[in-house]
Length: 169
Length: 102
Image (cartoon, rainbow over all chains, first blue to last red):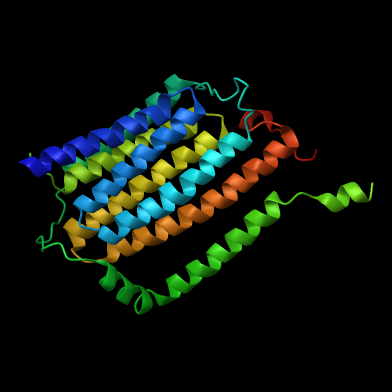
């Protein structure tokens, strides 16, 4: 079936991009292939009928977090220097632990008889999500907005240059 | 094999293992943060997949919205800390950051 083939294509792109993030020596290459991994997850959301989440994934992750990460890479490395490279530390034990965890998870996934519900038609989700957020999930929603405010103030406080200390020396 | 819940869970598991490997094997704080983002994405993907195939309602997607918000807040604060560390130590290599006062 064509849809399945397209799914496998996007899954392969996601996994390949994740592998490049994991094994690339260049920090910039890692950041750029993280873009493709995030876009692959966005495609998975589309396959799952979560249209609002797919757009949110692009806006927040690609437009926000990835840009922040790339800014941080550029600000913490002198572009002309070779310090943009990052070697793997103890790759064999890390690989072994990751492989064991992956094997355990795959074993669980394939051994468990997941209770499956009947698949309904994919509906547009944006209106329904808005309804739920402003009724059933109102408290977590408001709490999250406070958390975002706190995170914003905290980030600004942490990054602030401490000028007055230099003035009083 | 027709694409179903197991396929999404497998993809999530692979992404999680890759993120775990990155967090364990890298010492550049920014790349470690990328690994954390991969782990968060794999968890979010699992929530949406279970919401579609298991619960067949929007609860999984709502949880994923909150995960994305938390990931954004985490990335902002963590990168601010990384930049503050870089200003004090001139490095983002976490093993060279070994002093509490400067």
